Image (cartoon, rainbow, N blue to C red; front, side, top):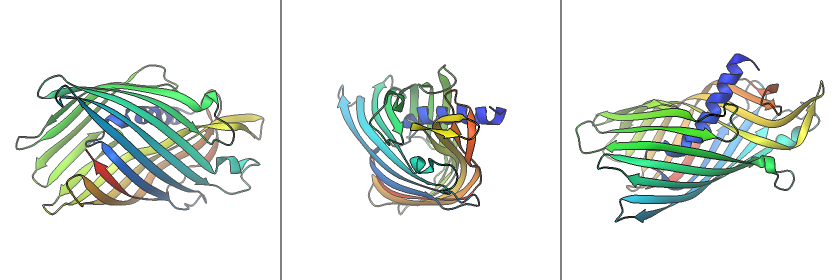
Length: 293
C-alpha cells in the first residue's frame, strides 16, 4: 500500500471511532441528505442519515446514560462497465448502536465513555460475521460557558475494531468563542469558523474529513485475480454552511462546498487498496433537520 494511502486509511478509522464524542450538542433526532454529484470521473455519491439518541439522567441530573442509534445509507453510482459486479456496490449501509455514559467529575470536567457496535455492509445477502465490528471511545469533556470567552475542550483515546493499527489512538477537540459573534474550532475530523447572529441565524465554514468503510458480501474478483473484501471512501472537504434555529434546540441547515481530496477504493483482506473507484474532486451538498440536547 502506498504511504499516503496508509495515512488516509489511518485517519479514516480514527475519525469513525471518535466521531460520536466530538459533537458540541448531541442530537436527539436528525435527518440529513448529502449529495456529491457526478464529478469528472463520472461518479456520484449520496447519503441518507438518521440519528436518534435518548438521554437518561442519573444522580440528580449530574450523570447521563445516552442510548442511541445512527443509520447511514450510501448510494454509490459508478460506470456500469467498470467491472462485472459493479451493481453490488450501488448501496452501502452503516448501522451504529451508541451506548454512552457521561460522569460529572467536577463542576468543570465530565468523563465520557462510548461503546459502539457497528454493522457495515452492502447487504446483498444475509448478515455475516464480517459485517460487524466494535468501536470504543473514552475521553474527558470540559465546557466553560459563563465567562467572556467560553470554550469547549475534549481529550481522549479511541479504538476501532477494524483499524489496521491495533492500538488506541489519541484525539483532541477545541472550540472557543473569541468574540460575541465568532468562534473557531481546531481539531479532527473538522476545523473551522462560526458566525452567530442574535436572530438565530448561524454561518460556518469548515474543513473536515468524511467517508465510510464497509464490508463487501460476495467478494469482488478483479482483473489479475485480486479479490476485494471491503470498500472505503475518504474525502477532505471545504464547505460554507447556513443554519437557522427554529427554536432553542431545533434547527435546519444547508451546507455546500467542494472536495479538496478524494480516495474511493476497493481493498483486499489485508486492507491494501487494489482498485481505485474515485479519486477525482467534486461538489458537495448537505441539508437536514436536527433537534439537539
